[in-house]
Amino acid sequence: MRTVDLIRRKRDGEELSAEEISSLIEQYTQGGIPDYQMSAFLMAVYFSDMTDQEVTATTKAMVASGSTIDLSGIAGVKVDKHSTGGVGDKTSLIAAPLAAAAGVMVPMMSGRALGHTGGTLDKLESIPGFRTSLSVDEFREQLRMYNLAFMGQTPEVAPADGKLYALRDVTATVESIPLIASSIMSKKISEGMDALVLDVKVGSGAFIKKQVDARKLAQLMVAIGRRHDKRVQALITDMNQPLGYAVGNALEIMEVSQTLQNAGPTDLTRLSLELAARMIFLGRVTMTLDDARELAQRKLLDGSGYRKFKEVIKAQGGDANVLDRFDLLPNATGVREILSPRNGFVTAIDAEYIGMASAMIGAGRETKEDAVDPAVGMILEVKIGQKVDAGAVLCRLYYTKDEKLEEAAELVEDAFRVSGTPGDERELILEVVG
Image 1: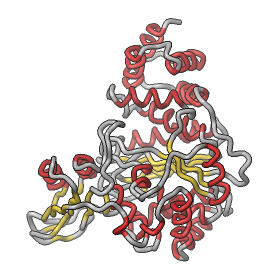
Image 2: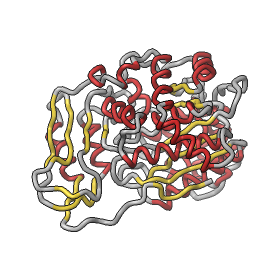
Image 3: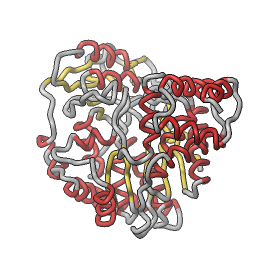
């Protein structure tokens, strides 16, 4: 069937067969379908959605577009963790070492920052010398030796996803739930994992703004995993304020170090422990989730997770001393304080505004080609619910260039809402799926 006919049918809400989807993705990956037609197809999907069967077929086709990483020679259940993206979300760098220290095999294929959300690879690369471009053999060997390895997506793994994501990024179709699900799951299945813990973010600082949509995405990814014989659990978590206090790559590494030494923010510590516990449970290290929670807590308190992260930093060429000496990390040259305009309670901190401002001063990127300044970002001094006095510091911006600083500072000012009465308390973990 002609590509234009598939576009028309999807535009009109019809279900395509697995064979039709497979052919479409194969031809596009090989250059047989032009970008303008695939762009039209993506927009048709955005408006007309996909059935579960179509999403599964899309995921399978994207996995089949390249090679998969064979981790079967490594003993143990391989468990990955993935976040759909948030502001100040550095849980992967805490949960993964804790799970690895507990005996779980943790292959982490991570991504980069795009738009207002952060990326694990950018955070790691703010550590001097840290190398994320591992070969598959290096990835396997490090996993065998240390239970944990971080790498970026290689060109051979799910190349259809790379091409489609680049197209989605410039055609305003990134937020499509079926396209998000197939993108994430195709990479994870290709990486050779046996189980996956998902952190599906919802709120102002996430790509997904409504809880009903976050639930749909979580259910879809859990279902895809099951159809591929993978154990998958998803947490739906609040992203209406930044997670922790630090936003920006080197600043977040500092907060990771503090958290792994049991001196981190309450919200970041709590979520990281829960994610680590579910990784431990899915990795079959413990019989129950409660036992997994106790083990994750123990690995935090005895410093095992902290030492594991140091081991992995060193193994991947980085300077592990940065976790003890923050002056070895890239440091900003200027600081701008944002002050409270009045007495009252902090009732809102718009995470999207914070993320946009952070990206504006260089901590993120608008396109995949943009460079990131690892030193810049911001440290929040308050969280929602705290009482503040007029003139108190709400946030500090750390920058290296004056360009766009005023615009970023205005965004941060607009992100904070200070009212006379305290707002409602927020739940951090909203739902569990799977």
